[in-house]
Each structure stands twice: as C-alpha cells, then as structure tokens.
Amino acid sequence: FGSRGTAPSFAHVHRSMAPKKAEKTKADKAEKAAKAVKTNVAKKVKKIRTKVRFYKPKTLEKARNGKYPRKSVESRGDKLDKYRIIQCPVTTESAMKKIEEINTLVFLVDVQATKPKIKEAVKQLYDVKCAKVNTLIRPDGKKKAYVRLTQDYDALDVANRIGII
Image (cartoon, rainbow, N blue to C red; front, side, top):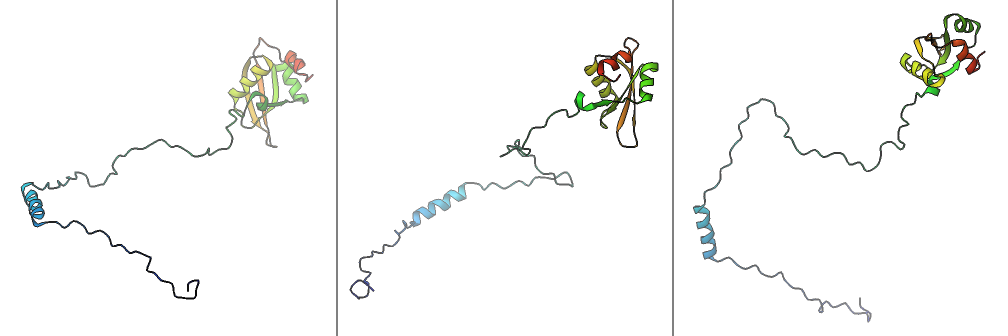
C-alpha cells in the first residue's frame, strides 16, 4: 500500500513493445531464391584415409609459461666438493705403515665419492699427484680410500704437512 493507505497505482509505468522488424517483401524473397539457384553449392570433399590408425593432427605446441617456480630454491650445484669428499685421514698403525713403506695415504671419504673424484680432491687439497686409488667400504658403512702417490712425492712429507704425524 502507498503512503496514504491506498493501493499503489502503476499508471506512471510505460510499457513499450519491441519495435517491429521490417517485413520482408515477396520481391526480396524471390531475389534471394534466384541468387541461390544461380550459385552452385560446394560439395564437401571427403578425405581418403590411407592408414588404419588415426593420428592426432599436429597442432601448435607453445613452450610452458609457468606462473610460479616449482622449486622454491635453486639447486646448490655440485654437492660433492673437495671438502665433502675427503672427510679425514686415518691414523692407525697400519695406516702409518702404509705411509712409510708403500708411499700411500689413507683417508675416510664420502660413500658417494668415486675414485676419479677422490684423486682430484687429493690433488686440489694437498698439491700431490696420485698414482692410483683403491677403495673399500668398511663394515660400519664408511668408505676408506688408499691413495698411492707418485714417486715424485713422499707420503711422509705430505702426512707431516697435514698433521697426521
């Protein structure tokens, strides 16, 4: 109800109908039909398939453009550096005997370290050339490397420089 208690009136609302579409004349329809008759209808050519299997058509493949990095931090690169490869020298009596008699240094090394990597690490850390490297994995799970030096270098001098002896 309105403000005076009377029923609301909708007299002020104007309803307009949609405008009428222009009616097509008979001449227009006839013209369109004549045009359709004159032009020939293109018949769709069916592609002949030569293979039994259907191969997906090659479409454009764009390079991925990620919204965010899948890894939060860049990789550190080489995790096995020279300081991680060679952990410590072995100072047992048998190791001392090897140093004195057969020009060999004995180290505990990382389990993942390979012989060439051990050779390179010894060369970088102690400035000596290795003749060959023998390795074994001890029962406690640690890897031991026997590094034989070339005859140009003395294992006793290197051991003194390291501080084993």
